[in-house]
Each structure stands twice: as C-alpha cells, then as structure tokens.
Image (cartoon, rainbow, N blue to C red; front, side, top):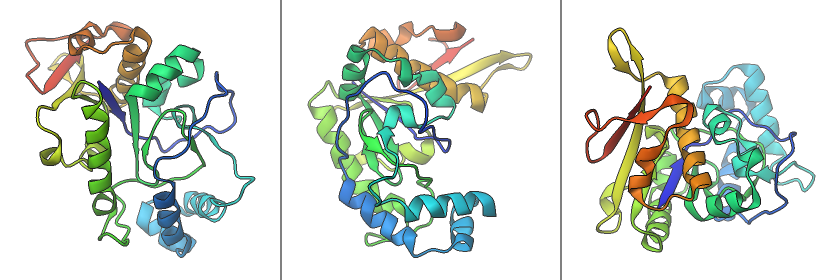
Amino acid sequence: MILTLSPAKMLDFTSDVSTKKTSQLLFEENSVEINDILRDLDVNEISSLMKVNPKQALEVYQYIQAFDMRRTSRKQAAAAYNGMAYLGLDAATFTSKDWDFAQDHLVILSALYGALRPLDMIKPYRLEMQAKLANSKGKDLYEYWGRDLTEYLNDRLSTDDNVWLNLSSNEYSKVINKNHLCKGVKIITPVFKEQSLQGYKQVTVYAKKARGMMARFVIQKRIKNIEGIKLFDSEGYSFSPNLSDEKEWVFVR
C-alpha cells in the first residue's frame, strides 16, 4: 500500500525530530531546475504567481535565493511541514520503526521536489502545484511533473500490492495521470465528515487533520491490507459503509 499526502504551506525547521536518519532527494535535479526559473522572478512577480502578500512574497524570494547555499537549513520532509495534516501525522514523535515503515509506504507530492519520502531532506520553500509557472515541459507544473510522478507512483505500486491510499488533495493528486497507472491499481480516497443538523458534511480544517491522522494510523499499526483502513478510529472517526462506495471511503464522527 502506498499513501500520498499533500505538502503544507507552513513549515517548521526549528523543532527537534525523533530520528537522525535521512535520505536523498529523488528528483533533486528537477527541483534545482524549477528553483532556477523562480530565481528570475522579483518579489512582485512572486506575489502575483503565488497569490501572496508582499511580506510573504519577500520571504519566498529569500527561500529561492538561498536554495543552493550549503548553510541553508534542511530537515526530514515529514517533520518539516507544519500544516493541519502534519499536526495529525505528528512525525516528530515517530519511533525508529515508524520512520522505517513510513519511508516504505508514504509519499508526499510536492510542486518543487516532485515526490518526497518522509526522510528526504528538504529546504524551506513555498510553491503550490497549481502555480502557473512556465517551464521546459509546458505551461504549468502539472505538465512538468505529470509524467515523472505517474511513472514513479507506478513503480512504487508495482513493488507493493497495487493499492493507492490517496490522502492528498485534488490539487496534488490530479498530477498523477490515473489512466496511465498500471493495470489493477486500486485507488481509495478517504473522505472525512462531521455530523451536523443538516447531516454529515465535510469541514476542510478537520478533513486535513484527519488525512494526517489516518496516515499515522496506517504507519503505527503497520497496515498493509486495505480492510485494515476501515478500522481507523482516531479522534472519534469511524467507517461508514452506507455512505461509502468502492473508490470513496467515508469516515464520520
């Protein structure tokens, strides 16, 4: 089983990590190429491209300019992101065996780095997959990464059991060309809903955290069989067979 997560905009390069293990980037040359394109942009152009305010754009500009400096901070990817999904994942508290299992089963999709394993060492950056950044392969980052990431996921799935647990957002998961995945791949996309007076509905902030919690659940329980996913019960969630179908598994609370 291969799990995918989206990255987060918020980063944490200061807090401690529970491992000294690291791994090398899979698409380092590609990330350098993309950063070189970004390096030609000024602060105003970055603000427009990334739809951020001038203060945020200046911070991103500084990330870009410092990208190839040896002294620039680096950290394991799963512990460097600090958004809601990563609050749920809580990789900083993984045991050594958790890290090992995560390294074999978790992939973080990234607009700058392509595909990241949890122990891959990354530097501070901000770049979303939906950014309209023209490049050597096309008009945007979907055209840049689509073929490479689809091939990479195919390779990972073929050495596992052909199950893709898609915990990434649509913005990131659609970089994978599902029509070009190897025959027999089963894609499961969990959906997390909250009970309300109007019935069950999805609340974005809770759904993001739940994606990370499910990844943590799979990692800590060493789940390899898809039926084990249905046992997910973190923070009151439970599987709803009535609301689920073959591709979308709904968890409610």
